[in-house]
Length: 303
Image (cartoon, rainbow, N blue to C red; front, side):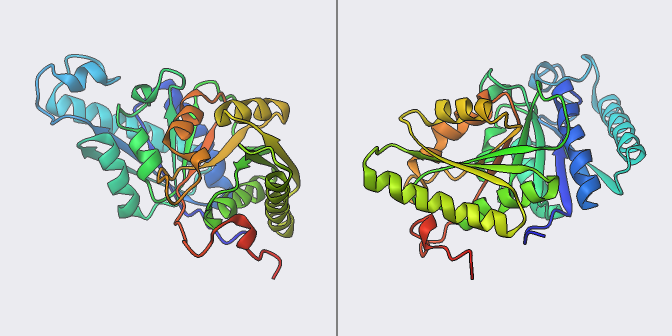
């Protein structure tokens, strides 16, 4: 078993159809790992306010205030909790917080020591169409744990073909390890994709060496792999096209936005494009950058 253990799953919910897709994925993962699921609903303006922004943005029925809103939310969460328990999830808890959604989510991650966040996204409408508020992309970029964003088009739970794109820039081993962990958990094939902006023989050779190292690490964990290296100038387009080619049902990408400590390939604009426009779930992994690892090739997986 991979070194990562999933024991606590945080699922932000807003009672939408996309949220139900996220719950479906959470159920599958929780049953495999025997993890606890915590359902979080964040009220994005103070209870008791009159018809303000909260009621215009929320999916809650209009005209409900204070006790009525809180009672309705509690009822919805309790119904979800029962459904999850009936589906075989070993332990379920619920949290209601009042505040900016992304702040409440990030706070809850630390409070419950979440190992992963699973949340819905409305997809190609952009970051302001995320399921729990306009600031949800902040969760993807700032959460210390991985974030699994699930699109409305998702039709099944679990994963069989995981795409792991990378490029020749400083990387964190944690991002690769977690992708391998997911493939191991679900019995999935890991499709390793090196993307290079440089088509020179030396650059392509180095990327192939790095892909082989990741491949060795995955196979050591008992994960089936494929490996490829592609020259491309538009990373998101390459990723989407390759995902279709491999019939991938999950894309695992690094969510670090620091241009100095992580690849230009996985900076904000690309991760935003992938998360917002992907037709399949995206696992965004926020690595702990280690300056001692200048590239993937410095890792010694085979020790």
